[in-house]
Image 1: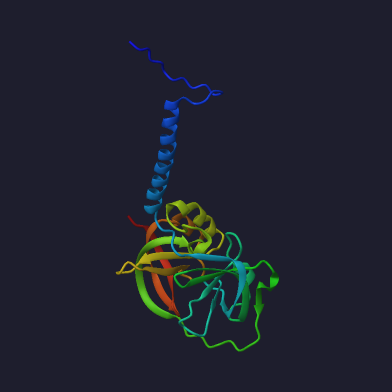
Image 2: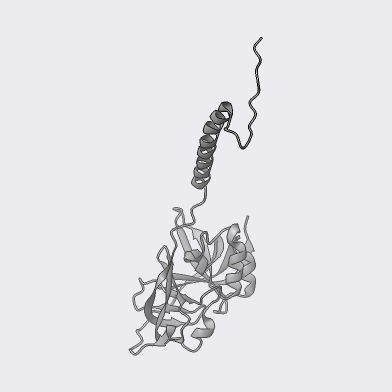
Length: 246
């Protein structure tokens, strides 16, 4: 009977033929399996949305500044969506905008937008908000749409519009809570009958910003009741009560 010998690999000697055949098959196969697994995982990931944060260059916007419930610019045309103003990082712009309510201003900063909603993250220079000569245009009054309740998810406006991807859901809860505590406007994202996203700004029933406790509900499905107003194409819900929904 012929003697058989097991191949034994020694690092400083050439690799045995059997080992070499195995490696030539196993390594490419393993790599292809990893690529396939990555593709499957990516395919089933939830889309973070089409939000954009353009940090490449600053932009300017000119409009009438309103301080309440959160600083934002409104425009003569009702079809132009109000532009909200925030600071760099997780901070709202209320301190810098104080005393400018109802004045025509030009702001400079970086744009974040999603689904036609826009935020300007103000540049750090003092000239990022400047009074602008000119007549303040006549703006239409808010429309009172009555008492309602709306189901949706609480998000922070800045991250949802592009500062983070994703800017919603449980994975973003801790970040959103910090943003809301820092003065970033809270927004309720809800779905209409056709599955399209609708956005409702949340404000306190007194007309000011929401209290800090709203941060505890970030990333949560909730039912919010209150008085709904419409400012151009911006809807604001002056909140009377909020409850987690299941």
